[in-house]
Length: 67
Image (cartoon, rainbow, N blue to C red):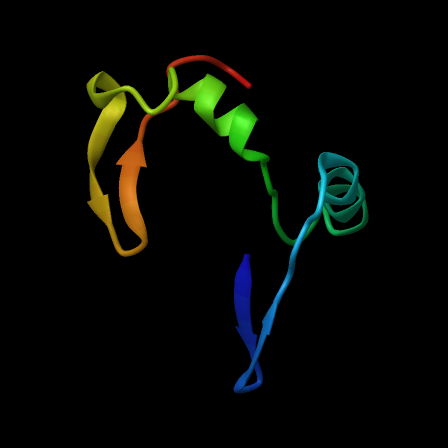
C-alpha cells in the first residue's frame, strides 16, 4: 500500500494478516484494507465474469460474494 503525504512518499507493508487487522482496527475511520484472499473470494477469484473494466490502478471487479 502506498500513500503520498506532504510531498513525502512512504510505503506501508503488512507481513501477515494480524498486522493488517491491527492496522484496520487502529485506523478504521480513515481507510479499510483487505487481504488478497478476501478480495479473491469476494470476486470469485477475479473471475472475468465479474470484471467491470479498467481503472487508474488496474482492473476493476464487482463483488460477487459478500466478504
